[in-house]
Image 1 (cartoon, helix red, strand yellow):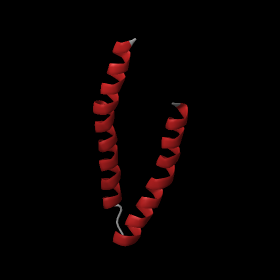
Image 2 (cartoon, one colour):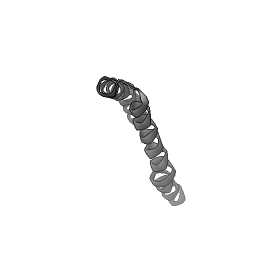
Image 3 (cartoon, helix red, strand yellow):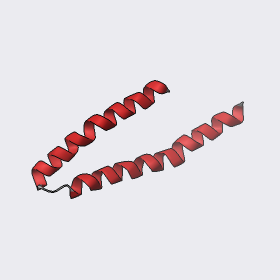
Amino acid sequence: MTGVVGAAGGLGGFFPPLVMGVVYGVTDDYTWGYVLLALTAGAAAAFTTTAVRRETGRLSHRA
């Protein structure tokens, strides 16, 4: 699990600056970059509150 968290952190520190730079280069504004970051965070939160919790609850009932 530590490796997954480390990989997610590494990717989270690598891709968002690239995306923000590309978006700023194309639009000369950071707004759409922030919108994309907010949508990504919302999707991650939705995934965590549904699929991950469901799987975690199912695994804890087996023990």
